[in-house]
Each structure stands twice: as C-alpha cells, then as structure tokens.
Image 1 (cartoon, rainbow, N blue to C red):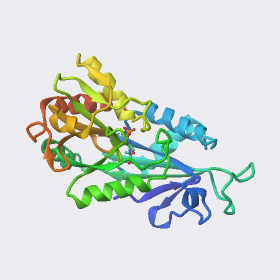
Image 2 (tube, helix red, strand yellow):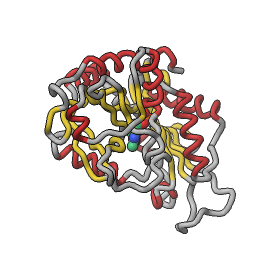
Image 3 (tube, rainbow, N blue to C red):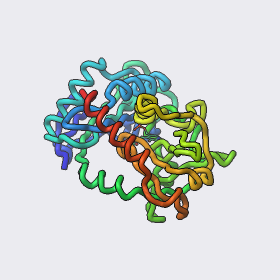
Amino acid sequence: MSRIAYVNGRFVPKAEAFVHIEDRGYQFADAVYEVWALFGGKLADAEGHFVRLERSLSELKIAMPMSRTALTHVLRETVRRNRIQEGLVYLQVSRGVATRDHAFPAEGVRPSIVITVSRVDRAASEARAAKGVSVVTTPENRWGRCDIKTVGLLPNALAKQKARESGAVEAWFVDELGLVTEGASSNAWIVDQDGVLRTRDTNANILRGVTRNSLIEVIREAGLKVEERPFTPDEARQAKEAFITGAGTLVLPVVAVDGKPVGEGVPGPIAARLRRLYIERAKAKAI
Ligand code: PDD
C-alpha cells in the first residue's frame, strides 16, 4: 500500500500525515480535488485534469497553490516515493486553515494541499471489466454546481453506499425529468439501438469528466458516432450496451440497471473495444 503522502510542502509517512482541525476542507468542504490514473508510474490525461483543477479553483476563488510545472513535479515525486506504477493519484486543495467563519478568511491564508497515491490491481480491473458491473438509480439530490470538482461528496457517498447494499458497483443519479445525469463517481454512457454512443451533455449539472472528454476523441477517431444527449434508465436497459467512465473505472461495461439486464446482460464489443483504445491512448500520452 502507499506509504508517503505530500502535505503542505512535506513528504510524510501516511500514518503521520495530518491536516489542521480548522482546515476549511474539513469544516465546509471548501476544497477541490482531482484524481489521475497512473499507468507505468505516469499520469494519464494529465493536461485535462490540470485544466479542470485550475477551473474548479478559479470558480471558488481559491488560488492555485503552485505553478502547474511545480505541481507536476510534486505529483511525480509523490508517485516515485511510493514506488507505485499502476494506481491512482489523489490531490486535494482546500482554501486553507482559519478560525471557523462561513465567509472567506482574510487575504494571506494559504491553500492546503494534500497528495496521496494508491495502487490499482490492473488484472483485477480487467477481470471486472470482462464481467461487467451493475448500477442502481437514485434521485438526483446534489447542489447545482456539480461541474466543480469539490470534496462536498456526501450525496455521492450515500448513493454509492446504496449501490453497494444492492450488490451494485455504481449509482446513477436521475433528475426530475427522469434522465440520467451521471454516476456517483463516473460518467454514464449507452450505445443506443442505432449504435450511437450517448452521454449527457455538459449543459446539464454534471462533472465534465476528463475520461469522458478523451473518450469522445477516441470514439471519433474510431469512426463511431457520438452524441451528447441524455437517456433514461429504460433507454439504458433497452440499449445495446452501457458503460461508465472515470479515472478509477476507465471504461467499465454496465450489464444491469436496477437489477434488470442491459441488452443481453453481458458486456458488449463496443465498450470492450473503447476500453482497449482508451487505455492504449492514455498510456501513450501519459507523462
Ligand atoms: N471521480 N462524475 C463524477 C461525479 C465523478 O466523481 C467523476 C470522477 C467522474 C469522472 O471524471 P474523470 O473522468 O475526470 O475521472 C464523473 C473520481 C475518479 C473520484 O471521485 O474518485
């Protein structure tokens, strides 16, 4: 397991890595995060995650704690010290430490930064992808700024727990129109009856998944048709295939929604192909 964390300028054993009790991330979820997949010790989709990090911070008026170059160096150094090749890198930046007061602290409070790395068993992930996973649906109950990747994840955590208790791996939020928004920690996709790849548009209240964006390029390069258009859980069940995307799941086939099969109830060829193409490209471009 990972042993070293980066906390506010220092590399420390994880067991001794602490943040202050008045960190605004802890008290108000006043913090943003990013997760990079790690292939061969290198960061996948690095640029996309940096761009989104900078946007999340800027939307919340939190300063970027260091330049992108310096941050890249620190992320890589944390990976190196943990000797992890295949895994996930977690970065969290909060507004910093200040006596509890809802409004922002005075100027000069420095953002807090934490980085951890965890190992992923790629063989186990491939086995899971070959089998496919189930999802459950749950009413959308999150705030209106899901485009910002904040650590305010309580609805996501509760949805994920609901999934786990039903033997599913992911929960799909469904809005008041009956349309799937996204997963608790992934974006949702189908291959519809016409063979068109569909995922929710980013005018909706969803996270602009970096994996989602890269996959759109992969799909176009593969000569397949993609539409950013919503779908209902019923359409997902009637679809040829369904899958989810994210730094943790990459491209992961969904074989059941609320206990009912998607298509034949087994992973389909398109998701399998896209998973392979996505991983190949992510590996080639990782830094
Ligand atoms: N989650 N939607 C939500 C709500 C997410 O939390 C995530 C990622 C995604 C996919 O985004 P990306 O492709 O950029 O990873 C979509 C991360 C992995 C997490 O919370 O661990």
